[in-house]
Length: 468
Image (cartoon, rainbow, N blue to C red; front, side, top):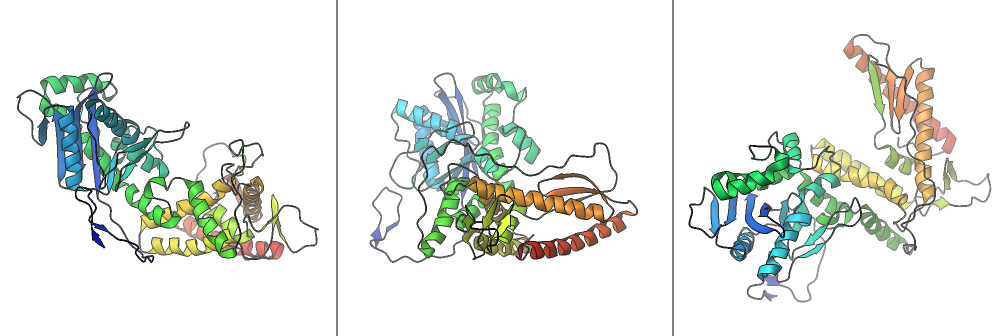
């Protein structure tokens, strides 16, 4: 063990160490930044930064005019890049964040650095930034900074399945924080106002730049999406900037279990990007159109993961060509499965109580991380780019879901209630009205009765314990 090389940012280097796993909870330090540019090719006007105790902007200005509060003058673009790199190394964040920083801010800064011949070293160790461009319509770019993570705010929200009609910083900030960008005019035509303020109203320009960095920081903090990325990383074995890669996460978890069994996984087949086998979606009932009073909504908890657990659905347990109708297989619409304990049900058996424990102590981040992981299992099995892709598995899950939904519909109808609508894992049922608390209590009693009868039905028909 010895000290790191001078100037590398590495404190210690360990030669040939002995390693063992440890349960470590990390509260990452996050620095949000944003840039302002003008013209084509872009010329750098400012770099703003925000973190607890940090709220400042580096303004590129070769004149001697006074700088506003929390603004630092940089004589030229090279000086601004140098000051930015120095501040990042001084603040030493674990995570660099912002809004569209990979496809815009870092990409533009890298081009400017090449133009002015600045090394642009933002990492804790020597090495340059590497940016991988977004691929495909839904793809997002990825940035690699030695010793730090780059987590884009937009990607964090989408990866956490937080739906927004508009993912622009102004729109999301107004939705989440109740505050938008610091502009006087139309936010969609802000370029002219920014340029005018840079030339004639530097305090307004500085406030605008600093506000952008602050809004991006406060959004990801309020929505807890950085903590969620780290929690998902610990579950799935991916780095926090790759937790949205559900196929890679599934690969890591499933192949780890295969190795324990001495089973080799298949390679990814050629032409896997072409999806040709038909797959069923969730079942939707014909709605009873109109406005309805006193409607119950009954919803299955984690339906697809529960189906996987109940019917032992797994790549290893699947039987493509059952030998005879008399064999002891679990036969559901879409496929047949062996009864010997399989990998996916066992993994889910471990995850379900962990999620309940997280919910019990109010750890919404851990609970959400586990929920996202569990729900991803169905999706990857029906995705052709996954090495374990098998449309029969995906169709078995949705087929069983359809069976359970229709059985539940008949159950309510036999009990004298009208089902108004149903979709995948939910049923909307017309109550018989009455006082609100009594209607709610009657709904809870129906839930208990339905769960009991459903458990008996599954046990009698398939000879398996119900997890639904």
